[in-house]
Amino acid sequence: MPNYKKFDRNGASAPRRPSLLDEIKELDARLLSLVSRRNYLMGKAASKRKQKGLPLADPDMERRIFETWKTEAGDKKFDVKTARRVFDQLNNLAYATIAKPENRKLSTYVLSPSHRAVNVNFDGPSSLFQSKLWLALAAACSADVTLSPLCVNDQITELVKAFNQAGAHLSWDGDTVESRSGEGIELEDKLIFAGNDPMTMYLIIAFGLKTPGKFKIAGGPILKQYDSRPISKILAPLGARLNTLDLQSHGLPARLECGGRMASSVEMLDDTPPEFAAALALAAWTYPQGLSLRFAEDWKGVALLKEVVSVLKSCGIKADLSETECTVKATKQASYPQQPEIALEPELCAALLAIPAFAGGNMTINGTWPANSTAAADAIKLLAGGGLNVDVSKDSISVSRGELPEDISLDFGTATDLFPIGLALAINTRKESKIQNIEDTTMFEQGIELLERLGIRYERGDSELTIFPGRLNWDEAWSAPTPFFGMALGQLAWLRPGISLENPGDLTDLWPRFWTLYNSLPEIDGLKDPEAKNDDEAKSSRRRIKIN
Image (tube, rainbow, N blue to C red; front, side, top):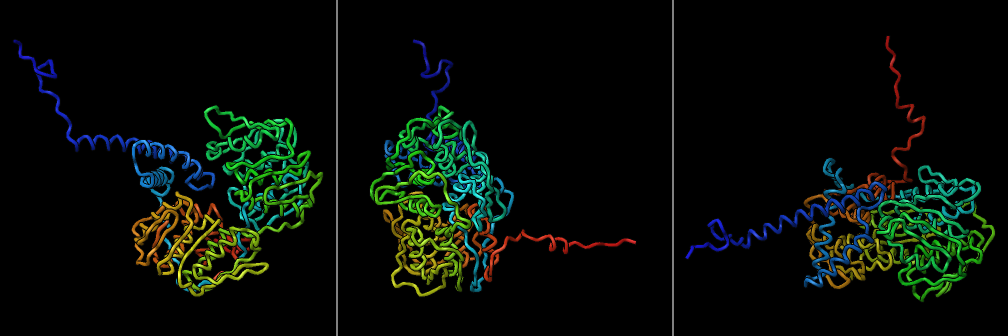
């Protein structure tokens, strides 16, 4: 009988089964290849956002991607919380290695503030949301007005450019935006680039509904990934349709077609973006019948509608807000005020006002504190809980370091951006502290990462953190996931000098004067941009040299 050898016709030995170690190494090699590809794609999108002056992370895109993780985690019996942490670490890896190539060439930003008590007085950054409302109205009314001081960042300049494409005459210089009279805005058959801010897109759409016709809207990488389905549900009863031009996407570019029968009343749904409702309310006076927005009690967008109604009333437009309805009457001509009153940006100002808790001394921000804002009230509670005395007057808000409460329990409420500032304040108390009502799971995990980097002991609950006092450690630079995390690092540098930040530019993108303020401490009486020199100063620095 022939002596056949199993598995091999050539008489070689049977193939050897790879060891467990070899199999894992092979899987890891494939995994790293996939991670590298993911880094490239995530970093490519983040780089485009950075070029537009936006944060690296896009919360909406991350949320939609993580839906896949949640589905797969459930099918494969993974713990969702653990999967969330792996997901966030992968995103941070992509942002650090791909989206920020300049960080591999430039040194990181080391934070070592002066340890003298601060004495600060300056004009604070104005509300971005209110600024956008007033600028859109200035364009729609063709008003001849100067708005200053504003927080002129990329969101504002993109809005200015978008309305100029529609026929407005807006321009900016430093913290001032000017509007000049003209023939008003006209969108028919135009292509408007809305940048990366959804609010700019909402405002363009809302003011485009007033007349029959069609026009196109394009946008940057953020709006290309935008899911327009929730706003399409609202546009349908208003006689309009938003058709995306990319059949594989629900984002921009898109064509808005108007001209159907416009209802005089429309219901806001659970997934309706509050900013879109605000944009509709702001433009409703230009509609033939005006517009009523109906919503459930305690709907999430009521606070923004309250601000819109206040702005409209300042322009002589009849607008009313109840617990379940916002009604704006049709008006032929609005009366734009010569000097609109724009309140301070509550969460940004509150983050700045936290500095005396770490450095000592006092700080005064000049401007109108938004007394009717829920977020503003919650911000003050957070500052007081962190040991600051807060004094609000008609034209300013001041803080100084006071006594700490016996029990430290911090709650930022609706001022969700201030979670990192709450973390820093809790650490600064050097006592056992609690932070409550942390609903944003992504931000929660980012806060945990910061605590672990600092070597701080903590206990976590479903939506709360208990932080224990301890010595702060810091080894390497960190790319702050949001500008407010960057500001929190700046404050913690008073406790642990030498903390380093990889992306200081993200703070400048939020408020162009942040580093001017931080680097000018401890004594500031009025804030000026360092590059702002008049012609006489520039000429005096030059010397004429005579050669014989």
